[in-house]
Amino acid sequence: MSLAKGFEHFVKPAEPLAPHTWFHLGGPAEYFAEPPTVDALQELVRRASDEGLTVRLLGGGSNIVVRDEGVAGLVVHLTAEPFTEISVGDRTLTAGGGAKLGHAISSSIREGLAGLETLVGIPGTVGGALHGNAGSRGGDIGQWTCQATVMTRTGEIVTRPREELVFAYRESSLDELAILSAKFELEQEDPEELTKRMQKQWIVKKASQPLGHQNAGCIFKNPRGMSAGMLIEQAGLKNTRVGGAEVSDRHANFIVAEEGASSRDVIQLIEMVRERVQERLGIALETEIEIW
Image (cartoon, rainbow, N blue to C red; front, side, top):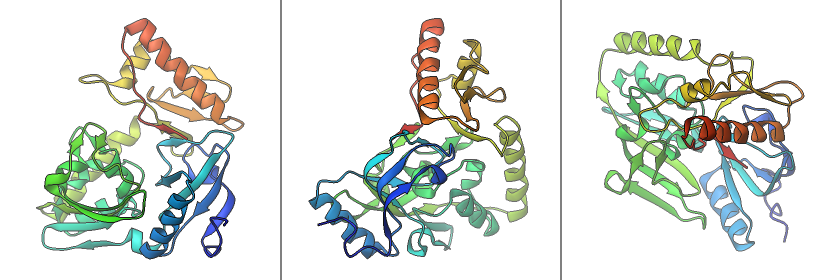
């Protein structure tokens, strides 16, 4: 049985993935799905599991490089309303895993709830942010998370309370197939003060990153107590190129993909940077970006 049989209204074969990623590179997914409901997602995941197909979840596309050959199996994109809803309660915010992190932040600020504003400028979805415990100097998303509902790779739905959740630097125990929703316990504060603080952080962050029109991604995790960008710069690698991919001259931990670049260019440049930082500084960089 074809995976798409019975799911034709939301499963597409051979869907190009490049438009769904920040790099705008890479080949197609064997199957691509945007399920309309949690039940539809559950049925699809169970069938894929029964057929032995690999299932990947695509969030905002800011932290992946899709290989030029594309991706075997099923890629799921949670864009329907049941996965993107945001609601606010008494000192809490609940957000779907497919909701944009920026929308969750702006919702919390509007309601005078502090905590998530330190994440301003971080791209992607709430689910992606939780999976990789997104953060900045002001803190990370894990410290505010009190509950998460997830779907396993066999389609089981499980709610995990705070005591079952583990968050560390750029990683978490939320490594199931999909984060369906999460609840955050925040602090009451004046919305105007929160807005001012967020705007300052946004300006500082954007001033040091590649320009908005560039197809770019942040590549490496910061080694403990150090900045990956500073290490790459110290190794003399700013503006280093492979084909159409270049280490950004604004922030060395970003790679910019120019028109005509391939995923192969980006992947080779990542490996070159990693090798040269190891050779010249004796430090092993670990990628934050995923290569599919």
